[in-house]
Length: 121
Image 1 (tube, rainbow, N blue to C red):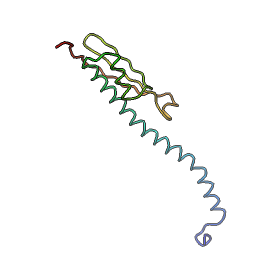
Image 2: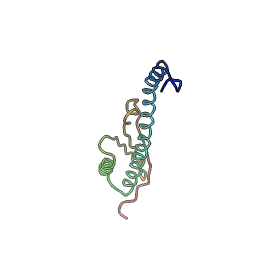
Image 3: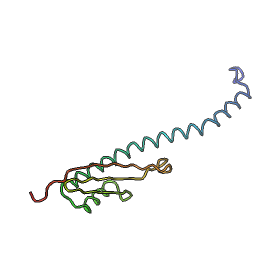
Image 4: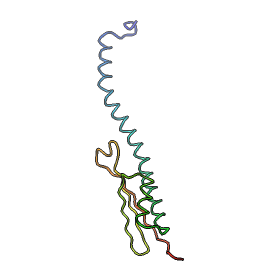
């Protein structure tokens, strides 16, 4: 039946070899795309955590309490830097990349600066 369609044994073997050569490259591209999609959600989570942590800091909480708050949102595998300058506070959160981004050495960083509420009003 295959011979009636114009496919002989050589053509079928050639199709199998071509498929075997392109399949690994296709899988790598698909996995890289999926990994990139996962990283988009990680960027959003880190950015939101930095914003919420800065808001928490602006309400007059201590630096230690603010760091604990950030770790409850993102987990313990993050770096938190808080710089206070009179009425201003800057919160910077860094999370290591995961998957291919971690292998390549990419980190996700977000920073927010807020005005601290006066204490004792």
